View 1 (spheres, rainbow, N blue to C red):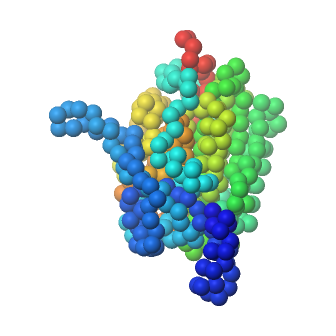
View 2: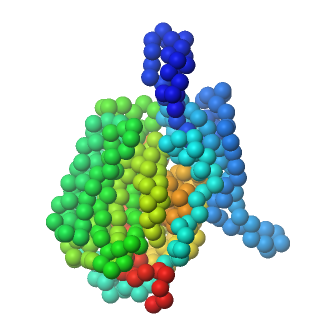
Length: 421
Ligand code: BES
Ligand code: ZN
């Protein structure tokens, strides 16, 4: 933005340090709690516009009426250099969530205050569970040892920060690993999606649907890692739980689907997003493009932190900025395919992970998470987010991997949602 005001930047740069810095500002949206923290860091920051946003949660009033739960969300223009400090503040001071979304323009940020309606003519998919034979054949093939191995490899990169050479190398490794798993299948493509403003690319593996290809499913996780405002080229940011665990789960689902030559009717896309930790940038870019192209994404599943068990319950389904019907489907899938597991429910606030990018575009999204919001892995965003600090196991992540596979096959094996079957 301020690139459009070079004179101002020049003067401001000289005034501060006597040298000229390439300052740049970005437009973000953030919840009220995060906004108050931002004002502490940078008191002159002002909300450009704000609005009560529906979280998607419906509460019951004392008189028994359904009341939508809302949250105040602000549009703010900030110097980009403040964002890492904001991230730190969100995690350190409060251990309370709610992130922020970095937008491409002021217009885009303002649009986010009134989330897009769903695509015209689309209806909810059939959430009946009717592919037990296939799912039950595939589930036992998922191996925690493979998940462990992928977490090990990814956390072995010095960091996977969106702006570093290591962060680019990690994206390249995921792409080549997924390519290898696809084994040259002509209905499977792997691409690295470039984003503007930073070098890290997202990775997308697409299995083209056999006869209902226009309807798509997205299973995602973020590939980047961070240790907050101090993250530099050679910082140690292993991000084993946040979010190598999610990418490792997706990778194991891909391996088993490919080993069995599974051919879905719907198109299934697996995504390892770039730059989540700096404002959901990779996923926001990708979800925006899908909406612009009117792509009929019928469901999105986000795996972000799956390998640290913080509670007696196994899988927490987060209910804010997610879709209630699909969340109920997830609970059904768990009951059917992993009946021994206990399910919990919680919330994480505005824009806490990439599902929010899809939700904002009017798509159906869910976030099954490793723990309640107060008991998540205390080591994330530090150099201690390692496999060792998760007990060198991937048993917890395996539960999410099974959930993801059952989700992919149960929804992937269906014909068009519009037609009566
Ligand atoms: N994995 C976290 C999100 C998370 C952490 C969810 C703890 C639930 C409990 C994610 O990678 C993250 O750190 N998100 C940021 C927001 C982002 C837009 C900067 C956050 O929560 O501060
Ligand atoms: Zn994180």
